[in-house]
Length: 484
Image 1 (cartoon, rainbow, N blue to C red):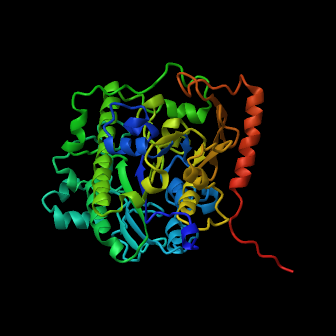
Image 2: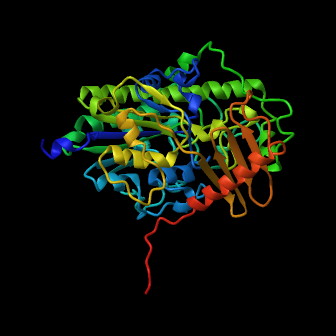
Image 3: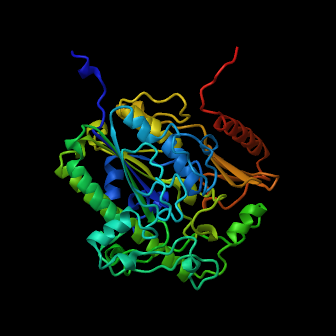
């Protein structure tokens, strides 16, 4: 037997797909039958679905910098939106894959750096090691890769797709107090949408990329279903006449919660049920737009003969409350499952088969990069704290998961919070003595009653677990230099 034949199979293409605000139940196959996501359903049904995947931060940049480096937010130094991951930072996913002979390509949203007014800054932008970088952090705000493409290929529609910059005075343009976006349906073809752009450009790239190199790592960053919720008519069509379930809100839910959480639970008292239903319908349509794109891309993989040899990874940076518990979108202390539990699906026909299976063990987003590297025959850097699940995936063994998973957020220097999830409990603690919450997993309704005052032994044990996890997550990944 030759040495080459003893090497484990590795994918020709690693296709890491991320969305923004997509909660676990944003996929129909994850218990939401009214959600129209047939392509994502197929990935779940034929791939490996990690049904208890938790993010390391409930907001964008800390979470994205974490999973793209395989490090905890405390280790990257990106703790709030607006911090910037340094250009020369190591590790990053493209640098790990490039070092093993994979060409790397970024298309769409990455958000490892602030993006406000980025088309007015003439200095080169950070590419973090990607060989090709077609970036667009928000759909239509800037004269970036997406808008330039629109101007060339859909000039009659591009102005309809422009949204205000986050610093613009008219960004806050909704009739509801404190709400940022108006839900609308765009009279443009789906192909001109941000999701349509990613589908088009990814398909074109895939049709030609393997003429230059044998192995590719691609990150496709969808903006959806992040607001503004502006689906096209095709995206909204599956939801016409469909009853959208009301958000889960419970009388007296705030009574046993500490002040930081109580303030969030009452934040949307100005919304009616119709407002919530409208948001949820448009939110679902944005998910469907991503599904359209994935269908187009998978068709191209099959046409190019790459489907069997492609490892597709689908996940999101965090979820969206969508009115559940009376809360909306995401936030620094939004530790409800709707925000911190996200879909994670891995699909590789030649590597895993296509029988499909679900894994219920606790996993973290920092596990993704070491797992992908391991599956691709790359030595996993020792500095990565996450666990590779490649052996279990290759052997179709059950994935036991971690004993606990961790999330952390720092709204500012004085206001921090952290969460751990164990098999039976979720524990949340705010800094400066601002309170703590203990939820029992499996309650019906979920995450309503605070057991902190009723389960002293469980509370004490989870305080210790959280302390231990925070100490480990704060370890530097830098090499030690000894002075003699």
